[in-house]
Structure formats: C-alpha cells, structure tokens
Length: 219
Image 1 (cartoon, rainbow, N blue to C red):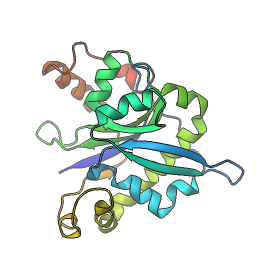
Image 2: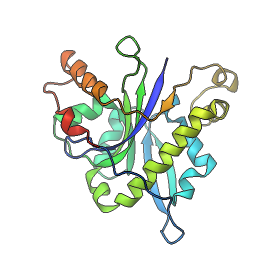
Image 3: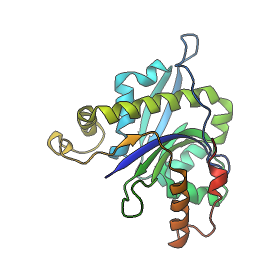
Image 4: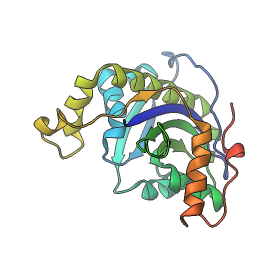
C-alpha cells in the first residue's frame, strides 16, 4: 500500500537532520510569514492544500502559496537560490544534491513510501528548505513544520476531503479522484530506509558517491 510518513528535517550542505521539536502556533504578535512552496502536482501534496483550506497554516501565522513545477529536480535549485522558501522533491534528487555538496537548510519533511516490494514503507519525497532561510527564520520553519504535520494528520483521517481537493490542482475529474488510491500519512521517519534509498541510487548509477545518511539525519 502507498504510505506517506512525515518528519522534520534539516538539509545543511549535505546534511539532512531532524528539525527542532514542538512549537506553539504563531501568536497574534508575530507577523504573518509569506511562504512560496515549490511542489509537483501529485496526490502526495494534498495535505498542503487541505492545510491551507482548513486554516492550519493561517493559525500558525503563515500565508502559504503553492508554486507548481514540472519536477522536484527543478524545485531544489529554486529553494537553494532562495527563490522559494520551502520545496517538495524526491529524495533521490535531494541525495544527489547532498552527495555533490549543494548547500541546503532546515525544513519540514514528508516521506512517501510506495515501493512495498523493496520494503513495506519506502521514503521517496520530502519537504525541505535552504540553509540561509533556516538560519534567518527558524521560528517560521518550525511553524511550517507544525502546520504541515497537522495537515498530514488531518488528511490521513479525512480521505473524502483529500479526494475533493485533488481536482483543484491536478487534472482529475471528481469521478476519477473518488477512485484513486490514496497514500497513508503517518509520523514515522524511517531513517534506515533513507539509507536504502541512497544505496539503491548508488547501485543503479544515480549517485557516483554515497552521501553520509547518518549525518543527514539526527534527532
């Protein structure tokens, strides 16, 4: 079965690490932070749209604007360059960037695992952010993480609402959206399987050198 697991990450020049733990929703005294979030139009990002619609991000003093891209590999350089504050990309692209030493930063992470023949759950994609933004606005990153996690939990418990939001950003008719297989969203990072992702990427030539996944994850 398709499964999505969410966790917190830091991506620092080949470092993917768990972001800081719990933070309260943004207080009324905090200014609203505006975030452009680079995403690909796939089912996996439905919780982002649900979170926007349900006001979860607004409750954390965040104004989130999804920015659609053709692939996650296009989002990575946009985030690294600071053109977008948060991005969503496949983990292979992120690991390739880590192996090449691309500068990265702190972010909230979602892990998609649709390869049960490799493992019951397998990490495929993540939300991430750039080093400069993580350093300049760590509280905003924590608020995004918390709102994103709330959105993921809501999506897991409200599949009918997930199906209703899909046609708003994917070219699906409501009839098709009602029948598609949905991911499962939950809270486990599955760090050993991120290592498996790196191992497979190296084996099949997507990586020339293997990034140190133990350094990429902490917490």
